Length: 234
Length: 188
Ligand SMILES: [Fe+2]
Image 1 (tube, each protein chain N blue to C red):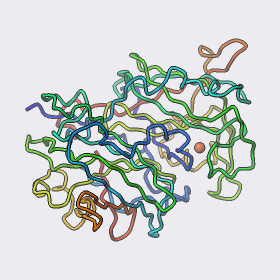
Image 2: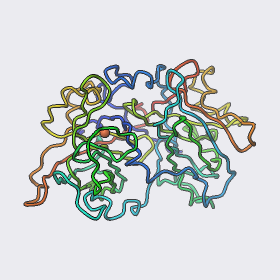
Image 3: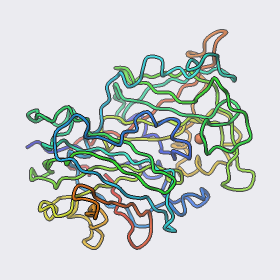
Image 4: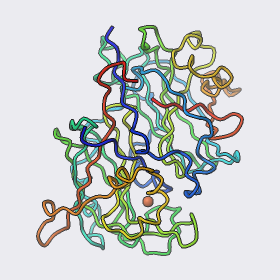
């Protein structure tokens, strides 16, 4: 039988640890025992594949889910999903969610005293194309306060959830905006030890996807785990 | 190599805006196999329930086949089984789902793995997901399963669902993030 090829472990420092005490909720929720490394089996190199229809053709546009248009700065967020070898991750589901332009989520637990927008839910999804490309239309989310420490504010961000080809490649992350002064003080952003890795969470302003009289463009490329070249690489 | 993998970040407290549309507590619908239910709770380091976790499930069909292009084997009558579920915990940290018992999937050495469910857990406070497995009680293959073998014996039972008094097809499996009964989590 052909040996199974697993997925490469992330380079040191490029992923957060579970415990990062400046992010207070990690203290009671991070496991204390070390993770147990397991052999590669079919159960890790397979994973859910969704039909393209799961993302309806309009689900990528968060500004067209209601009668009117949401308030705020209209933006296009686009990019490519590739693996660590630069190969496009094709036809994979991307889910996003975010606060509205005032920094408020449409969620029962969000107590922030900022207005809801009747024309904005803040949820979208799409599937990458054959070249790994995706695109969302939305509004720029507002910063919002949280209870982690005194005067704590989350930088503007959009939550991203991706599956990739396997159980091993599942990724949930957040996209930030260039030049946001709150990034410097954000423990969630700083939970990633390696500075270069951290910077890859910041989108870049993109003239190419900026449309005249319509919307600014931001580019956010996402890299999922690459495949081991040989079964020996574990 | 263009760049290492994008860093993980927490789902935060408001995932249910974005991730609800895939919620599915009945994975068994429209597929063949022995049905059973799993119920349990997610508990933090103080033993307090976690009301804002998401549990994702991935498993093979009753014939031990994954609905995925890398599992090449003769199609079985159960191949319409998608194998994926997603369930948020409630205010009391509880979750439950119904599915079919997966068949044994072959392991790295060609020998069968014991029937199991692949589990991902996300929540506020977790900077990256947790990966674990649910195994079945009284399953003879547990003794030779290649993954259970690498888990210290004393901690193996955190991965095995327990029978309940309710009925023989309802099992209980709890997630302890910390403490004496801390669940075994994997790196794969
Ligand atoms: Fe957020």
